[in-house]
Amino acid sequence: MRSFVQNFLTAKPNPIGIDFGTNYLRLAQLRKDNGQLRLLAAGQLEVPKVARKDWSSRIDFFLQGVNEILSGGEFVGRQVILGLPAAQTHVGHLRLPKMEADALTKALPWEIRGKLPIEPNEAVIRHIVAGEVFAEQEPRDEVIVMACRRDLVQGLLAAAPKAKLDVVGMNVEMAAIVECFAQVYRRKGDTEAINCFLDIGFAGSRVIISRGRDILFVRSIGMGCNQLNAIVARELAISTEEAATRRLRLAQTPAEEPSLVAVSESIPVGGTLDDRRQDLRDLESDSPAAEELAMAGLSTVNGIVEELTLCRRYYEAAFPGKAIDRLIFIGGGALDRRFCQEIARGMGLPAQVGDALTRMEGREIIDDGTKRPQPGWAVALGLSAGGLL
Image (cartoon, rainbow, N blue to C red):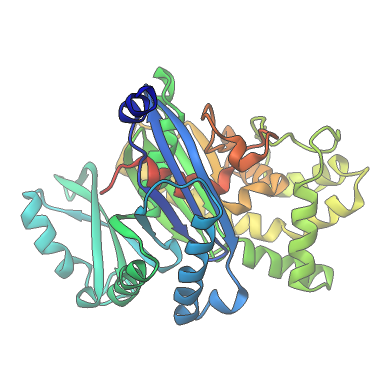
């Protein structure tokens, strides 16, 4: 009887969040106990190379991978929230006259025609009204539009029943990221801070500027870990696989070494990229391999800093008086601490590696008790946390 009452009173688990990225398939399930999120189960599998470019192979892997992860963890139920893969989601900004919600939804397919590399009648379209801006001397709405090919969405939805999944919703990755960190940063000062998330993925990166749960700006950048590995490989005359291995090995070097910036610490800022070349040599004087990798990746850093600067200018022009407070690195690329450090220095912003498991009970399921930041889990955790568009 006591067991029955305890089970009856236990909070219902959230749906399982499924993050189907280019490089990894991640599943996570949360439950809220007395206002505190607890991680119940999580698992991940690396996406095979053949499935990263071929959608049919990706769906086959999805079916196999989801069942493998679910069978190996303590997941409860089969209700899931799917994330629309960021690599297949196109993003744009529109400034439109103010109108009712229904009228805006009907107008968007016409407004995005020719402005996104996808035909509106072939797309699933979602949007966010970021706020009021002034354009042509009149108030307008800043609208963030996200579009994904309809056949890709239908392919995921059709695959779900084959994996015995009950899809209760779909969400875009940027909304899941913001929801995840709205749960993490709940202190008074944090809820009003303007955060700029840089989600460094395998095939590309995303810039998301938000305040609390309010998304103010989103843009995709065509530079990610894959491109960085290719540049490092070319400059060091090694294979891309070896470049990726060296970068990952260096990122996992124990943080006690004096030449490293601890991944849990804030990243110092200041100076230009050109000024940093000698600084890098001095910083890594005891680690030739680290210096070699850092120098090889500077051109990629420069490209990302230029893109981030353009994003910052657009955002600050649209929302004057609401300057960015900090830069938060997430995604698999955030594990490369030197890479993130150089981007932060180039932007001149306080920065940190985002830990999606901050203050979360049950985090040992993912980090094995190391308590290292887990920036790659933000999407899966945010999907399970909720906040559907």
